Amino acid sequence: MNKEAYIRYLKSRKSSNRKNYFLESKKELEEIQARFKDRKPRLLLHACCAVCASFPLEFLHDFFELTVFFNNSNIWPKQEYDRRLQELYRYLSETDPSIPVITVPYDNESYMKPLEPMKDDPEGFGRCFYCYAVRMNQAYAWSEEHDFDYFTTVMSISRQKDSQKINEIGRSLSRLHPRTAYFYSDFKKGGGAIRQRELVEEHHLYRQDYCGCIYSRRDQDDKGI
Ligand code: SF4
Image (tube, rainbow, N blue to C red):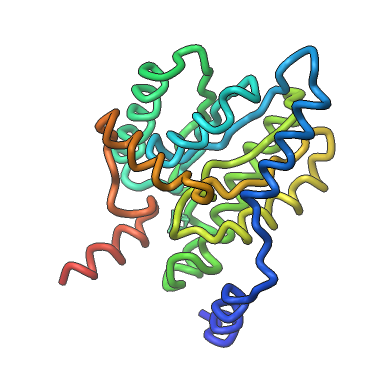
């Protein structure tokens, strides 16, 4: 790992230049409501698990026709992947069963190959930036191919994930997929994190104790030693 780059990144996180993407999302919603008078715009929502998807689904529900995209081959092992996907189906069946879920084949081996050289990066740095971007890009490309108006990801709700970085990735990807707009967000803000906790309790959602990949499992296990 490049330690200097990591320190530079940590310092940049404290900068007052950080944008408030929650306020940005509220502004976007007002504009969207003014623009789409005859129909709800279609939004593809990348989701990594039911816990992270719970509040974003509620927040976006009245403004968009939603479809969920589950492409998370980072998750290891396969039983864990299946469990998170099943929980997402269960959550939707209890809230809005009309929301479709698109899945892609699970392939952890191929997915993890490019991440292997970054296996010792601390969580929330280079390996993770790559991991966010790969999944977001695949979902974003799918949304553009299928004529969605908007794309976004639930990942900004996580306190372990830098919402500035996620939105920067979204902005870069929007240049690659210009027919679908990126919906900027910071779902943890504006009471989102509190509402998420309520929804998790209300629906008894399975709350995993690691992000997903084998390295995050390893790091979590190491903390217990
Ligand atoms: S810790 Fe999470 S975001 Fe980072 S590489 Fe692993 S699965 Fe991806």
